Each structure stands twice: as structure tokens, then as C-alpha cells.
Length: 244
Image (cartoon, rainbow, N blue to C red; front, side, top):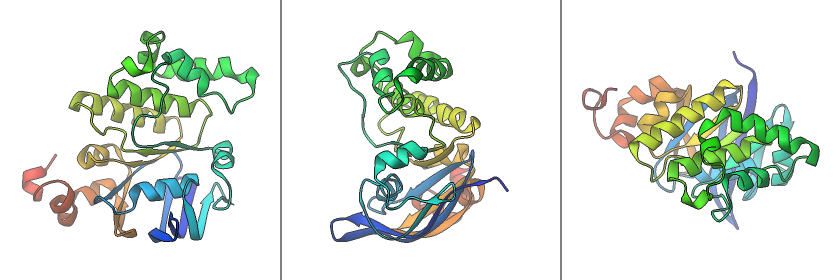
């Protein structure tokens, strides 16, 4: 079995006095892609924010690379290797791609900026072709790839992605999924919340299914994808109608 990267042990989290995620337990393994599935309001984004530390932690443990991190602030989790790309645009639209990449280095020592930008830019050739373009003038898919690149500058070993293909054309969704696979091949563990359930499951190693803040099902992505309950609820029909 691949090395354990993240373990969630009975995690309960939410906002104010309102728990959304309840007693959620799961394991993620190094270099794998896991898709988190659930209906609207199931608690998927809340779980990602709980792992990164931007909402209230009520109880349970978040164990990252053998260390409990649930009491650490987000910037300390980032230093330890937890990266987060939240839902919606999170770049600087009036700044160029190059300037956005420089902003992504803000937590790195100054002497490492040039090497970090060079390393990530070499991994995403599209960014090179848009180097002097304002981020706000990129397509939605290009902006999503830029935002992933900005997080990867600090070399996270766990990447949390919230709806990376939301609102994108089918072609750009495909480009984003290819990018996610490319990231995982470097050894980064990826946990992705994705409205395109079929596309996400096709690139994933494992899947977690949430219902009302709790873990409902987990397993290899291929098995979850063929489960009749998942097909009916998230893939729009029975096995014959939706077989890939």
C-alpha cells in the first residue's frame, strides 16, 4: 500500500455553532487522486476548508504526514505542505500571469522565487504563452490552471481542489483533469470536489461519498462509479445508460 498522506479521524467541523461535517473519517494515500462526491449542502467544501483550517474545528483529528494539524492555523498547514485552491476565481485579474506567479511565492524565502517559478512554469507550458497576459483575460480553464500553478509554487504534498472545472467548456474541463493527473504523477496527493462526477471518477484512484456531512461510501473510484446508487444519484441513470 502507498504511504499514508492524510488521515481524518471522526472530524466534525463547520461554521459558528453549526457543525456541517460530522464524525468524518477517511484516509488518503501519497500520490493518489481522491474524488469527494455529494449533493449540494452535503459538506464537501466544508471538509476541504476543515483540512486547510479556514473554518471551525469541533472535534476529531486531522493527521497529516503523521502530525496532528487540526489546531494549526492555515499558514502553518501551508508550510507543512497542505495547498488549497478554493472554488471560484482566486487570482489577481488585473495582474499578468508572471505577476500572479510572483505573488504565489509570497511564503517562500526570496532566494527561492526564481527557481520555483521556473520549475512550475516548465510544468505548464500554456502559462509561458500567456506570460504577459492579464489573468482576467485568460479563459476560465486557463485561470484554473494558473491558480493550481500558484499553489504548486510552494511545493505542497497535499492539494485540495474545490470544483476546478466548474463553469468550464467540456474541452477546458478535459484540460483541467489532465493537469490534475499531471500533478498527481509528481507524487502530490490530490483531494478534489468536482461537479463533473463522471470526469473526476475517471481520473481518480479512490472516491469518498458524503451525505449530510457524513461518510456514506468509499472505495476504488472504478467501483464507486459502477455502483447503481451512485449512478442514479450523480451520473444520471442506470449502468447501461451511463457506461463509459
